[in-house]
Every structure is written in C-alpha cells, then in structure tokens.
Image (cartoon, helix red, strand yellow):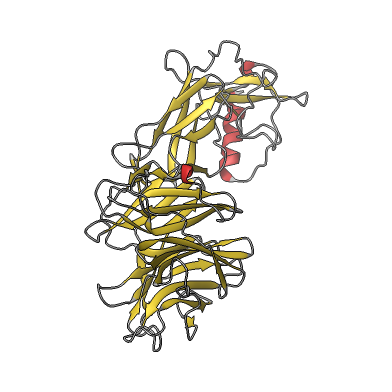
Length: 455
C-alpha cells in the first residue's frame, strides 16, 4: 500500500498522471505523510478524505483527490459533511479592531472581527453576518464580511470627522452578541487647488469688487454662481450671475440680476448671496440693508435671473430674542420646501432658523442658538449636507478658515486640523468625479477665487 501511494505521488509530481477522484471507505484510507484525515460523506453518496485546516470555518478541507468540485475546498459547516458542531459554545460577543486608530475620512480601512464565547475564546464555527454600524456619522461597508474559522475582515470607510473629545467607533452586532472597536480619530482630507484665478474682477459693473460666489451644480453638470459686486462709482451695485460648463471658465451677465428694492426693507443694498436648488426652482438667502436694518432676506426664482423676494426679512432684529439678529447666513435645502439657515449673530454665537413652507415664513419659535466652535465673530461661508452629515466651512473672528461637522445641525465638532490653510467659500458635490469641488479665496484684497477639490 505504501509503495502504491509513493508511486502515485511521483507520477503526480512529474505531471504525467491525472488521478480520478479517490473515494475512501474508512479513516485508514486517509493517511497522508503521517497526517491522519477523516473519511467524510460528500453529500452525493460518495466519501472522500478531508484534513484539518484552521483557515476553514468547519476546521476541515477536502483532499486534492476529492471530486473536482470539492478538491482542496473547505468542507461546508454542516453535520452531513462530518463537521460536528454540537459542542461549539454559543457566541457571546465580538472583538472588533481597526488596523489604524487614525483614519482618513472617505478612505477605506480594514476592521478585524472575531466571534468569541463567554470566555473570550474564538468560536471557529461561526459563519453569521453581523451588522456593522458606527456611533458617529455614516459608515460605508465594502461588501459583507465573509467569516472563516470564526473571524473576518471588513473594508469600511467613515463619513464624518471627529476630534479628541468625541471619537468614532465601529460596532458589530448579531442578536445579543456585540462588540465595539477601539477609539478612532477620523481626519478630513485637505482641499487642493488645481487651477488658479478662475473667477475675479469683471470689466463693467463688477470691476471694483467681487464677493465670494455661491455656486450650484445642476443634474446636467451645468454650473451657476451668484455673487455681490460693484464698480468704483457704485452706480449699479447688486448680485450678479455667471454660468460655466466645467466650474473653471465662467461667462457673466452684463448687469446684476438682483438689486436693492425701490422702497422695501432692503432698499439700501443687497449682499452675500447663498443660493440652493429646490426641485425646479432656485432659492436665495441674502443680506439686505435698509433704514436701521441689516439682516437676512429670502427670494425665489424659476430661472436664476428673475427673483421674487419676501416682503420682510426672515428675522427682524430684537434684542430680547434668543437670537437677536442674523447676518452672513448660509442656506441649505433639506427637502422640498424645507430649508435651514445658519448665520452669525450678536454677540457672536451663530443662530439656526428653519422653514417648512418654502421660505414664506420663518417661525420665531424655531430659532435656536448653535455653535460650531468657541470664540466670537463666527461667519458661515458654505454649508452642505453629505448623507446624514452636515459640513460647514466658516471664518472665525480673526479671519482664519475653519471647518466643523454635525449630525443634527446644532451640535458641532470642530476639525482637529483647524485653522485650515485652504478652505472653500462655496462647495458642491460632483457625482461624476466622486469629489467635492469649490472656489477658494485668493490673497486678501485680490478679489480672486481659485478652483479646488477634495474627496
């Protein structure tokens, strides 16, 4: 018998023999170089040899001489296949560990998950599919974890930046069994300028000053921007409009598309537009000035050129209110007709307002104080919502650019990378290229804006 086996091995090694499946009849037929295997039923009425292999969930792997469909594959975890799991203890928990304690937002990293019993011993027979969640922001999972021998690796990414005060965690849950990873710090990717001076002073009514544009990107990939501008003689101050097919080269209107009203509350001037798309119309928040009044107004348009403004500001200044005033607001469309505004206020802590009727009314009882960092003079620059995560880029009292995130719009986590060396004055998501793109202010006093991107 030994001589026959040796001859078989020699012929196989020489590549001049193709063995038919070897059916076993007893354990004695499954001895391979002093390694004792098991003669196991395959489920098709024939038994083949299988040998121990810790990388298989069942702990067993079929011999190379089994049927072609089984050869060198893991024995399935079933009683019919010979894997006796009757003595397997139930899983009590999971151990969850990320390969790094500091990860980059939106970038994939691996998480190691192990099913363990009450004694924290691995349960090799576990082949379930635990649910993976996070306690902070959005978790993106690159496929279902495939358990082998009681453990698996999952590729995930996090959509939220945290700081040292509040860390992110990955949790695995299957029934009553669960486990949580170590503390994870999530770093935001930096903005990278890819083309300079894409938007600057014009040659006519906007030849002396151009304020930060507010940019939108339609579903057709068409870009539009609104901005405040004026010339040296201030004869035609207002909010202008520009269009682009790539966000880099812009074509402007020859005159403002939105100006101060003739006799309304904003008859002195209109500034700092914040524009969003709601279905088939445009909505705009803007700073308006009138007699003893400087606050935020709201307007709607079906084409981006012709605007209808509310007769009154969204919030009238009142020293007795929780939010006495609001300026330099950033507008965000949450859903059809439901909008949110974050704006600076006196004495400096930002205020949040909401509306649910398309901006017609902004109930005072929905005004709430909010703060995205400590300090005074915070001015929101651009506000976006990414999945369940709110993101805001803003200027602090010194003029430095900062960044924070939130999951409710009121409780904010400032970036540990603050202050930022590069930050956008307006930002949109480009689904075709799977990244943000925006305009970044150039040197102070240059009235220049550069194009930048970030994941």
